[in-house]
Structures are given as C-alpha cells and as structure tokens.
Image 1 (cartoon, rainbow, N blue to C red):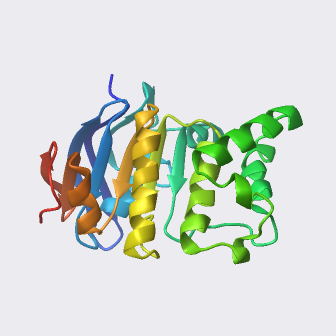
Image 2: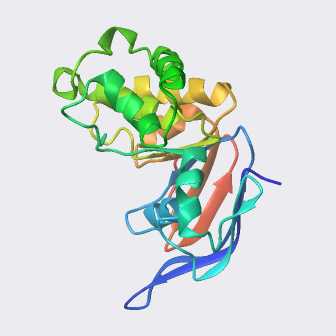
Amino acid sequence: MSMIHLENISKLYSGDVMALDDITLDIESGEFVSLVGMSGAGKTTLVKILIAAERVDKGKVVISDWDITKIHRSDIPFLRRQIGVVFQDYKLLEKKTVYENIAFALQVCGSAPSLIKKLVPDTLHIVNLNDKKNNYPNELSGGEKQRVAIARALVHAPKILIADEPTGNLDMINSQEILDLFLNINKIGITVLLVTHNKDLVDSIKKRVIVLENGKVYSDKTKSKYSL
C-alpha cells in the first residue's frame, strides 16, 4: 500500500465550488513530490484533507494503511503526529525560545521530560540550529524561523512531511537552503510533499511533479519541471 492513497476523491464547497474533482493519486513511501498549480487549483484543499482539517464528499483517503476517510475527531491528533506540516508563516510562539518552541510540540502530547531532552537536541542538529536554541523568534532571520518550524514538524518523527508554500516569505538564497533541508530530510526516509508556486525550486529538484488545475490532476510526471 502507498504512503498516501487517494481514490476518486471530490470536495464541493458551498456555492457549487468544486475544489477537488474525482482525484486518484498514490504517493509512495520515501518519495519527494512537488504539488503545483495556480491559485484556486485545489492544492490547499488537498493539504487540508490529508491532515483531516477537511473531509471529502466522495472517495477514499488512506494514509500509511490507515483509512482516514471518516476519521474520528479523537484520532486526528494521532494522525497529525504522523504528518509533519510546515506553513509559509512559521507559526512560532514569540515568547518561547527556539528550544522551547520545539519542546512545546512534545509537551502538549504528554511526552516525558527525559524524551524531550533527547529529541529536541537531535532535531535541532538536523536543521542546524544548535547554536540558536536559546534565541527567541524575533532574533532569527526568516530562514532560521522556517528551520525552527521544520524542526517542530520533525520532532514527532513523522512518516510524511507536508510543506505548504514554505519559501513564500524567503529570498532565493534562503529558499534554496530550505529546499536542501527538505531534500536531506527526504534522504532519511521521510516522504515529502512540497506545495509551492516557486518554479525555480521545482525545476531544480528534478523529481515527481503533480500539477492541479480546476480541482483535477492536469499532469503527473516523474523527474519533471514546473509546467502549467
């Protein structure tokens, strides 16, 4: 079974807005996939469905052999520990240090202090922020803030990392550094789904590209470039 399996899924919003229209997709374990498309193509809706923030109106959604199509509300936190999500706007807690921001993601799940003391430094090492652990968000660059957000998403050791426009607030140099980090994360076995408008980044990856248009899969190619 694929890491992500979408079978004939559709999502209709009020006003007869068809956000997703009969989409079938499989993303395998360990893949790096770029999801692209114009605004309104359905990318954000697809992300929301994968993290159970939205429900499909039709079809089947399976994450790592787990059918989440009709997921119970109490199971959603467990699902979201399997799927790390990184957004464009970082969503950091301004009054907590880098270390505390990452630790907080474990604390709210009831992780033992001994486990937190082990996992946070290990995760800081992955994103190369050990030297910034005592800094507050307002003392960081945009690229550093995004690396903290990535660390927070990684600290649960998710099977999947979804990055929704993660470089939207960054210049090209910082964007490339963030992309390199995602590629390294992918190399350790985590499935990465990169949702982006950044053509240059997608073209530099040379991996699978899925293009959405009007809620449908317009194209799905391996080792491809950004093409609409």
